[in-house]
Image 1: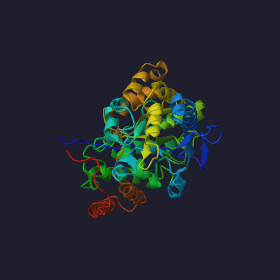
Image 2 (image 1 turned 180 degrees about the horizontal axis):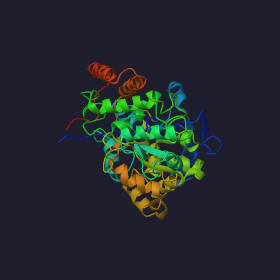
Image 3 (image 1 turned 120 degrees about the vertical axis):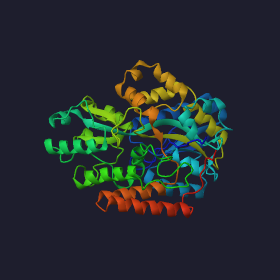
Image 4 (image 1 turned 90 degrees about the horizontal axis):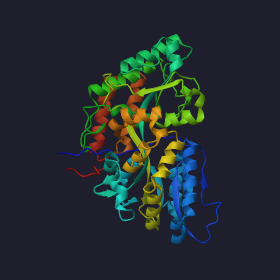
Length: 450
């Protein structure tokens, strides 16, 4: 029996703030202790950054760090400056020893030595504690190259209940099929003061945002490619219908031609620019922390599917972030100690983190999931309950293949949305991706075949 493996990622699922700055090490006095460099891209939610900074400071004054004669030096580097900053640091020998990254980056990069296997530097119990679907995507041919922090599912449909009522729609009944999604968007545009019916993702963000839709394809073995990445699966009825739905949204002006914001931001809905929007679980955290007055008015539902069947079905992709040790880390033992302390140790740290984020992020460890189950505030949170029961059990982790595959898909989806023809665009995409595989542009399948 073949084993289906998917790599959890967030490739862009979180928007990043502008600028670059350093924290947790620049202002504290750690004497002659050795710095162990950790780099991370700033998250949209300031609570995430505050939590990480506070935890690192606590660790740096813990017995583990003091007796080990080192401390963690945290540096925030924005996505748009990451590659250039990293290259400069590598030239100077000051590259990060620990990197916070999306899981999908790991599989193809681990085999060429970019990352160090964690197994020799962390307790075995850390890995046996991982939830099965997370364990599968952090394990590359028997070794673990990233340790998960959290997971987040997307796409989820968010909508204004008051706008639904104004348009004559039932605020407790969200659209279930792609056809209904288009019909609702048209009704909202026609019967409210909104210029558009929904905020749909566009431009290059579609490269990863579309995974939430493509994950719904029950006929596919592995998103756009088959299980071992040897065949392309895009010129199909499923993708034809998906492309047609996007074409309808844009040709009928049901969604802005130029997005109001990144897909990572929910403010177009919260600030009443649109009555419906797609987002990830992180969106509810933004609403709770930034727009609490809108919380009662914003409804949420599983993402509509092609068939309209949503119960017990995959309706979302699952993303997430974790920590990896650089392949040339000078202090891998210390890196492993810190990662285990922060992400593989006391469950309280992660349950506190998830509380701070309004239960918009979800556990990657069995023990953390159990701890959350014992917290009344988590179990009584309707959104946490909704995602835990209706989305996460069926969510499909993001693919680990090269970004070029998803980039080409995004380009084709944009062309179809602009009226260049769905069937012709899909035929061209199929041929283009087949050429990419034939030329070896995808790279070797990293998980082995069994």
